[in-house]
Length: 240
Image (tube, rainbow, N blue to C red; front, side):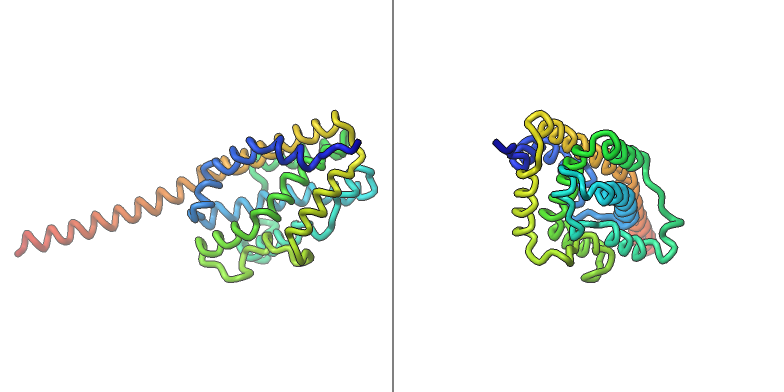
């Protein structure tokens, strides 16, 4: 009897998914509080993560477990390169480096690809299904919050090679359910997916400090302007 891996992943990562959405950075993002400097650092971190994951999955495209869920139309590395060029300019490669949490995330991807490739399924599920499920919502939020054009800095969310995202997710889940894994391996893949959520949360938390600092600067500037305006009004009253 085939293992229902897609359902196991969905059920087994519910708590981690909720925790990730409740991190300060993501919570602010979903409320439309997006600061461009913090966001472009996220894009840079994601670039290193997807570069590693897609490099390893391409190497393993003939692997019996990894191969069936390797769909080139999902690849995000090139779209992230477009976004990085928008945020940093044509010399973006010389300006970016991964945060410490992103470095740890990348190391883990390379590690499992070498030692136990089956676990890459957990990483692919965590990133790609999330991108397909909430991508358009996040794209709209980013565009409104940062006053972006239709394609400016949001190529990451556009799956040009996928006509029907809902139908593709059905196809992807069916591919996961047909993978030649037993119950024990399926459980290990779920555990790895939860770890992947944790790694994403560490990336988000690293960005929270930048976001809080940026919001603090805005508030400080606003309060300073208010104080200056108040001082002027008081001075005018005294003269009168």
